[in-house]
Amino acid sequence: MKYDFDKIIDRKNSNCLKWDTVEEGVLPMWVADMDFAIADPILMALKKRLEHPVFGYGITPGNYYDIAAKWVERRHGFKPEEQWFSHCPGVVPGLHFLAQCMVKPGDRIIMLTPVYYPFFEAAQRNGIGVSASQLIYRNQRYEIDFDDFEKKAKEPEVKMFYFCSPHNPGGRLWTREEIERLGMICIENGIIIVSDEIHSDLLMPGERHIVTASVSREISDNSITFIAPSKTFNLAGLQTSLIMIPNPSLKDIFDRFIARLGIKRPNVFGISALMASYEYGDEWLDQLLIYLKNNVECVKEYLSEHIPEAKMMIPQAGYLVWIDFSGLKLDPKEFHEALLKTGKIWLDEGYMFGEPGYGFERINVACPRSVLIDGLKRIKKTIDYLRK
Image 1 (spheres, one colour):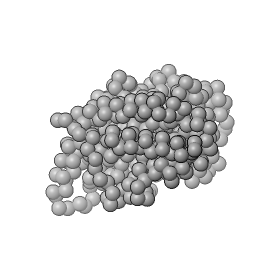
Image 2: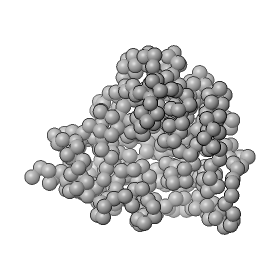
Image 3: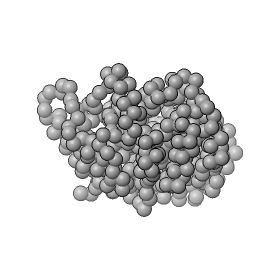
Image 4: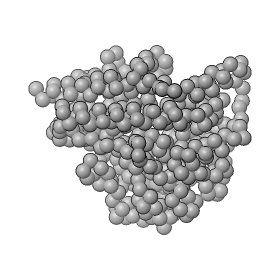
């Protein structure tokens, strides 16, 4: 069937983080969820579950993890083993859990910056230090500074690597060679790789994601990977994700820790949604990806015509666009404040993603095109105001 991504859906007064936390008149284009209706098969699965009048304790069906494994194989050409999977209520909680059960206060976690800011929070809120290896920004693209990464990886306090793949906020896909090189540096220095791959299904047409665990058996045994239908199918509110841990010893540590917290099972709606997503969501997703690509092109064309000083990174994956506004020669914090107060648009300020993010803003383009154009006009209005 044909899905309508141009349709405006009023999300206000739905206990919505994105729309119910802003002042009247402000357009929120920050948090990473979509303003699109979910796929019909998922909605039907949830309605069917809702028809049963009892919502007691649930269990994961026998084919639950097999469906997830087949999805990864179908979309990315690599089939994980069912026994690698465990339930996790979300990637951010999972990052906190790993910081609590696999490293200890005083240890450090290495990250490629700029990076998704909850990475920093998951470490620091648990007494873990951060070792930042700054990405090289060249021609609107990020590259890994392997010399710097290896130097920092040799520091004895570094025990874990939070790896954002695809990269958030830049939307960069890492190559097999890059992942292998990072992976071997981690193995040589006793560093566990934690790979956040929840944006991996949101590939721009023609692109390919490399699953970290697929690169080699050695790297697989030293990796922990998050996947989820939450970003792919706009289901973050159901708090259902998966963690893949091929190494039985590491998996045992995680599973025992989760058991101690009393977090054993996904909620019954999360179960239905995940299974419907991974079994019947391909058609919706394939149409979505074309729409997102056109939205990215819309941003590119608008900036080129109206704000040529702003340079965007073309995302290879995801619906988040990372824009470099440093060419405007404005103070980043003053600019962000003006976007909110004058332009009435809420973006994610670049400096939240680490020091290399100063001068950038992240915009979420997973919205109807009319909303996106409105947002771009608000950015231009802000810049015009500041230039007066």
